[in-house]
Amino acid sequence: MKKLLCLMLAAAMALSMTCASAEIATSLSEPVTIQFWHSISNTTHAAILEDLVAQFNAGRGAELGITVVPTFQGSGSELYSNVVAALKAGNAPDVSLASTVYAADYLQTDYVVDLTPYIQNETIGMADYEDIFEGLRAASSGYAKEGIYSLPIHSYSEVLYYNTKFFSENNLTVPTTWDELIETSRKITEITGAPAFGWDNLAGSFMTLLQQYGGKYTSSQGELFFTEDPVAIQVLKMWQDNAKEGIWRTAGEDMFFSGPFANEIIPMYIGDSVEASYIPMKNPDLQWSVAPIPQVNAEKPYNLTSGHVILALSMDGNEAKKYAAYEFIKFMTSTEANMAVTCGGTGYLPIRQSVVDSDEFAAFIAAGNPAQKAGVEQSKAYFYEPAFTTETITSNAVRSAVKVMMENVIVNGDDPETAMEDLLMTLGY
Image (cartoon, rainbow, N blue to C red; front, side):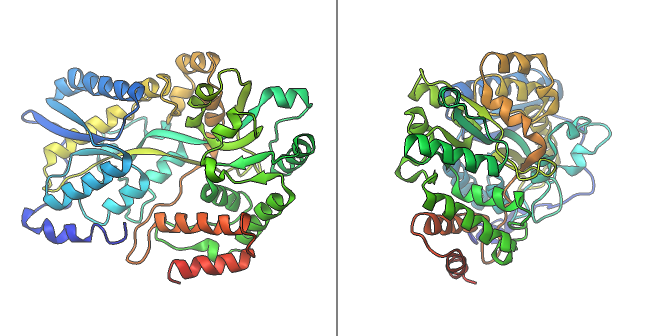
């Protein structure tokens, strides 16, 4: 995505837009229609999304004079490409789903609306803004540009999946620390003669372990802290040693561990909480459960989270549409809307403490949804991968290079220091 949006600035000069305004609209003098682009293709989730838009249009939207028109734009990458094309053409949607990485890219222009003055406004603000988990709020205000340029809407985190039957039959305890997980892995490998543990997201494992052991990854300004951090080498050696011992493995051609886990090839792995919906489809008879991921220090936990954010775009500075977009975003990130998404079978987690504390969520967990339970138990540990786009590098490029570095160390047996030097060369340093 490097420099992908730079051409937009020149292309949109003729729009004579007002990039910023000290005043914001807090009401409408006439009806407004806004466009909402999304990438939700899952039939269950898509139905919930459409229903929420209809609720808004019939309720708060009708009260204020706002009509939202939702449009499916394909996969997440296709949505991104379509938004980029629309920004270049001067007809971007008023509201869009995105990842934080894509949001950071859009912020290379002045078209992303800063939601701060709306959220903090005494009349129309979000009195329950701090009900959103702190780690999720930090991501939406942690871009290179100061302000709140998105809000979380569909969240997931990493959790530890384990085969309950295997653990019970072999008197194993679910590990809560990495020392415990390594020791449990050894016991499992002694029993099975095969690797015991894996991690779907290699780059994510590097980010998580780096921070758990006291290191730093990157900043929203594109600073690569980890390249000069000895903890990074420690993490690489940790992975390499356990792979050489034969107790840990990468997903390899399987891509994700939900398949080998469902087929009882591996009894324990870390993956996204949304994967819980796929395991029963692959093996309905499997006895399994989910736990929070291990931590180095329970007092300073870190758990990688991700998902969709929702943001507003304005190319002509139309204050009425910016206000309408904010009202829609406020509704779509509300307790009511988040409850529908979380308890509706989408696989996503609560973004709000009020949802976690609700009777509806308690019933949802009791009905057999361990991934959601484990996910929210780690809510105080949530952190997002820093998202950035600079003149020379993007967070996507760094993540890709980290994954290659991890594979070279784990699979090819490269020396960690050499692998780090190769990463720097790949990134042009």
